Image (cartoon, rainbow, N blue to C red; front, side):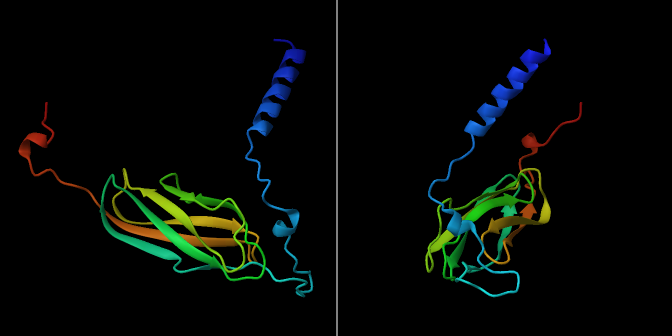
Length: 161
């Protein structure tokens, strides 16, 4: 393969990757800009995210079980709240968050799904949420005590060969 072909392939891939990005036309630059100046003076109200609870304990669950919890929050600030990303501390913790601005006084949820497959004992996982609030990063937590099931039926136990 010659260099020209490689450049064309790279350009085509770059265009394809850029076209797959999620377009968010419902958010203005005014929503994203933090209006607090360097000296601490505020020119306008900022959004503020207030969770009803920042930690949820699922208690005892069986290994392999998928559990879900909705972390309810409210924008208690004076400007639109934007969540730009939410990521779990591992692949077993999947958050889903509102993609549209949360208006002042409005409530919404960050839905977290935890898959306990391959896990055992007491586990604690986190979800990092990035917003246009001050501070911009918030962390919520889930906990569970994962019980490994035991087989009561002898025919289900592994046999030595």
